[in-house]
Amino acid sequence: MLKSMTGYGEGSVRSSFGEIRIELKSVNHRFLDSRINLPRELSYLEPEFKAEIRKKIKRGMIFLNLYWEKSGSGLGELKLNEELVQSLEKNLGQLQRKLKRPIRIGEAIPSGAPPELIANFPGVLYFSASPERQRKAGISVHKALRKALDNLIKSRKEEGRRIEKDIRSRLGLINKEITRIKQFIPGYRNKLKGRIKEKLKQFRMEKGINQDRLRKEIAFVLIRSDFTEEIIRIKSHLQSLTKLISKGASGKNIDFFLQELNREINTLNDKASEINISKSAIKIKAELEKLREQALNLE
View 1 (spheres, rainbow, N blue to C red):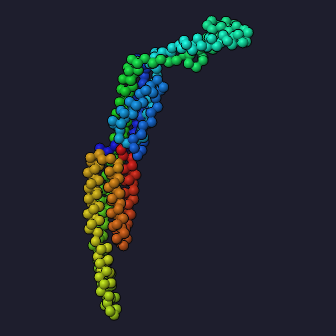
View 2 (view 1 turned 135 degrees about the horizontal axis):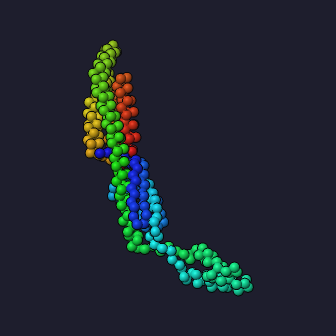
View 3 (view 1 turned 90 degrees about the vertical axis):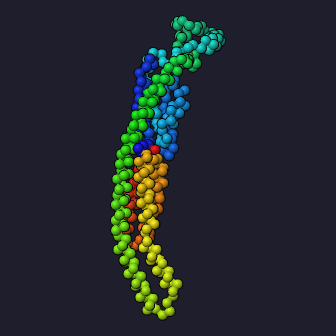
């Protein structure tokens, strides 16, 4: 089964830490690239998230957003930096002496500094995470991630099925045009035979026929009338493509055979100077271009 690089997946888990919801979105990209957006308290999980994604996704730009509705105190609690408070108290004491008016730490009094003055100072209150809470939260978060990844992969497979249906349809159209080209070849050869006869008549009318020139003219016409090699290669590439699609090949492998097909069609079109063959070749090239666009969407 083919898998698209485009998809969306979501997973959520309820735990003692609150509801955790993860959204995953993927788009086309040459390689695998994960852009992860986590709350500060869960930022330590980013390397684990990237490793988990690499296990299941081969290619694409992955955008991950985690939403957390907290309950309780989260992964830890606020603590007081007592050393910093003491330092502030000492410095505010020096300020008191310099200003020659009382400034007291602790109780809020009309002439003193309220506790908020100290509490709002950077670093006085800090967040201290609990390793055990982090471990338990990590278990819940990974559950949500696995659900989101499963849904993302499901979405990419569904899109892959639509792409596969389109690819098979276009390969069928190419096969029809190749059949049409094969039908035009006998008539094209008859035209070339007529041209050879005209050339021979011209040479007979000329004095001192240049045998080397005559052989080159005939060889040139015969080469341009033989499409056997190109037709065989085109059919072979089409069969290989069909097998690759059935095996769920990567977009890169499919694109390689599409390039080879395009090369053979160009050769065939260059050799033929017949309007009907050229029309079919142009139609095939148009389909190949659309197929290459589809291949770029595949993982």
